[in-house]
Image 1 (spheres, rainbow, N blue to C red):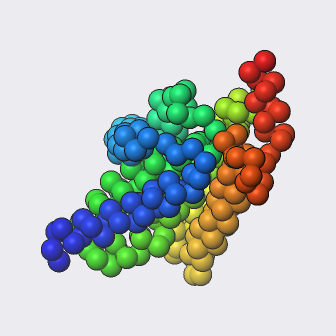
Image 2 (image 1 turned 45 degrees about the vertical axis):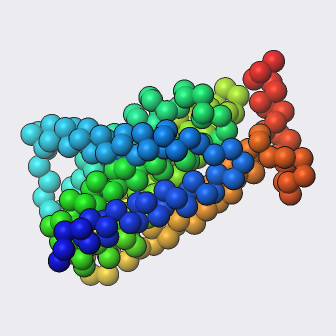
Length: 244
């Protein structure tokens, strides 16, 4: 298989999802340069993940046939580490940027970082597994990473713009980790007959929650014009309290 075709297949889902989220940012879109930078933060987060995971691997070994140990593997060693690696870039570098000026921006930046992570990871997997792996991950792993990111970004948006609700940042990391862990756990214990369906169900739940989160933050934008179909007065009143 031509290496350029494999590369295109590996990069396509992350690019498509990134464009989808960009277009969903209807009221005040983010600078392209900052989105590209966010994507590369996601690439860097892969190396943070590898550093932490390799450190953990020196002290913890997992029995691949143990249902309980695979839970630790899925929720802690994989999900928490990966989501934390992405979280530190969104919360630490993008959260205080002046362009992060409405709740939906939390979703935008979290997804862009996550797509950088997922795309780089996808390239590695597709290079090893070929076109079959590319097609499979196009409809599973990459959309799953996007769903984890939307939940993270949703709560980061709430943390920044809801008065005295900064603890939502912990919810951001927790929600992404729980959904990610559930998805991976069912894959890791696929030796149990039929259990792999749990991963598909987790993915579908994640997509459903993501759609709801996107809609909520679209409607919470302070940049909605008066002639738009929906204006959220509660959010605007809350912003006024913070500015006064």
